[in-house]
Length: 314
Ligand code: PEP
Ligand code: MG
Image 1 (cartoon, rainbow, N blue to C red):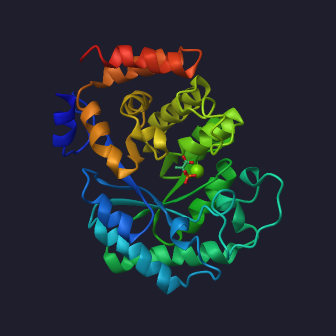
Image 2 (cartoon, protein in one colour; image 1 turned 180 degrees about the vertical axis):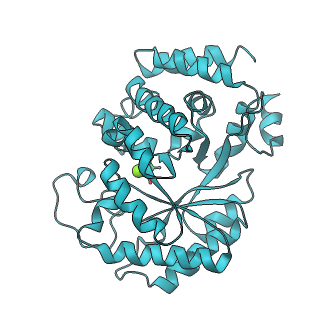
């Protein structure tokens, strides 16, 4: 029965009692965006722009960037598209972003932090996004990766709003999660990057197979931080998305919704399973599952406790 429900799920995302939760796609370029349209997604929750430029020695021109961003925007028509500014460095080094030799690149100059040494790169990218928005007659949302707190968020938002665009930031560093109320005060929306948030909370490299038990987003300490961000979003009445792979886990997706998360973005192939699971539960059940997971002392217990609540039927 479940397999048929998943195959037949067409969206839009909502719980059994009607709470809307946008189910969105993570994409990297025009090709992946056009492929994502074939899945039951309501738009793009994370366009990882750096992935389109990984092989470049020279920075792409504003014109080239504009046409790339238009490809993704055009694939989704007037649906929501969230464009992330370059997340260069660490696991995604870019040839045209000269970086210092660092002993710990994941803790180094990556993501939005390159703006200090390379302000021109971000200026060109925001100009290209603004041009793509103008040409297409749409209003993409723009967010920055690797924001440490409200000061970073305010600086970024000023640049984005100066171009008439909607400004947000990723929350993927624990400091930004702890200060979520102050970060949300500076921006129009936030999106939680659970891959990095887990890595930095647990001090465990996301690429390490040996540490996979630590980099599990069901870790109660990570869930606690997500709950803090979700609650801050409810207080601020602003959208809180999740765009890490945690959003691809149907059970965890329900828990995230119970914590106040308003959209879920992941690999598009996961969208039908996530949407179908959400349609089977009501919001109170999601909240109860979140409470059960938060009260657990390890990730296996958290998952088991949440599953017991969610499998009991609305
Ligand atoms: C994340 O960190 O969860 C995220 C969505 O960004 P990336 O995986 O590209 O670092
Ligand atoms: Mg990240």
